[in-house]
Every structure is written in C-alpha cells, then in structure tokens.
Length: 242
Image (tube, rainbow, N blue to C red; front, side, top):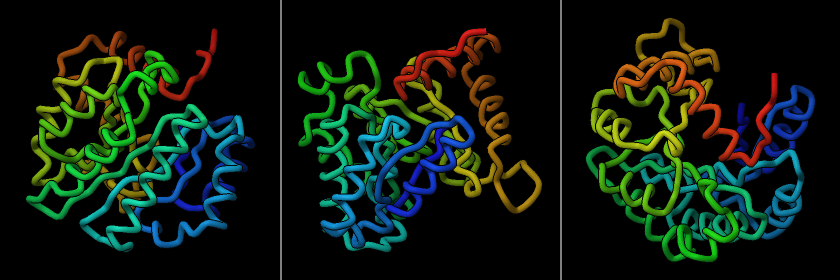
C-alpha cells in the first residue's frame, strides 16, 4: 500500500505512519499547494526524498480545474519534481485535472514530462523496465493515455471511473498493458458511487479491481498477481515470500 503525501507536513506524517505500519510513502507538493513550494520548503522536501522509506516523488502534477495555485506556480512545481525524480531514481505520482470538457492540463503535463526527458534514454537507463511515474486516478482522453504509455508510465484507476463524463476511462483501462496497470482508492476521496457511506476507505479498492477485471475479461488469479507484481516493480520493492 502506498500512502501519498501532498505537502511538507504530510510528507513527515506519511513517513511516520509508513514506518509504524510497514507501508510505503512519498514526498511531494500537490499542485493545489504549489504556491507554497518556496525554496526553504523545497530544500527540506528534497532531503526527505532521499529517505529509503520514501519510494515515490509526489503527489505532484497540474490541476486547472480547481486552480488553487496559479498555473505558473504549478508548472514550476512540476518541473522541480520531474528533476528530483530523475535525481533520486524514484517514480513520479502525477495528479492531472482539467475543467470539464477541456484537456489543457493533460496536454501541459505531457509536454513537461517530454521536456524533462521522461521515457528518453537517460530515464530508461536510470529506471530500467520500471515505470518512471504513474498517472494517478486517471482522467483524460485516449491519446493522453497513449502518450503516457509511450513514455513508460503506469496508469492507475480509482473511484473516479464511475462518475458521469469519465466513460472514456473504460476504453483506456481495456488497453493498458498489465505491467503498467495499477488500482487505488484515493481515500478518503473519490468514493465509488455504488458504495454506501460518505467517506471512501482503502478496502474499496476491491470495487475498482472487480470493475477492471470484468472489463478486461482477465482471469482473477492472474489479474490479482499482475497487480501485485506491477506495484512491487513500480515502488522498487522486493516481493514478499510466503
């Protein structure tokens, strides 16, 4: 299980929680708080990124829907994360949202990743066959997913797939190779519409898994093992035995 951070305090909290529960965590500044990523904060964050219990860089990315931080701050924040991920050889956790019926955030995300060299030779040398990042809680057009897969990124699906307007996610989920496919809940947010209660929980990952397996027509045992293998590959973990 991966516990994502979204700012400096949650990076500290995530590390403490992960160590106590033998989980994995990240270090990063969400686009919502990109304007808070001043130099002194960034210096502390980069120090934490070297911690062995931090396995990914993020959650970072772009959010032009809510736009809690100016676009220029979001773009600068994302560039810093891309550089840091390459430096510490840890994959990116990427958030990306545009306003309904728009795709400018997705287009800018792909552009910045390409400008940063993601998927190119130097990144392939550093990451090998591991995904250099993941599109968290996928939302966007098919060609956006194709560009991400071309760069070697993984794609994760969560409760957002059940919302009206996200129907294209089913088409994308059917085409993602098993070694680039991940699932998530993003709890306590993005509760699947078919689940009771107001708060999402990690156990609801089973709802996403069932939706994906049935959509793809995969064998249950093979599907489950592929998810575990892809996650272990993504975070650089040694699979547990027994």
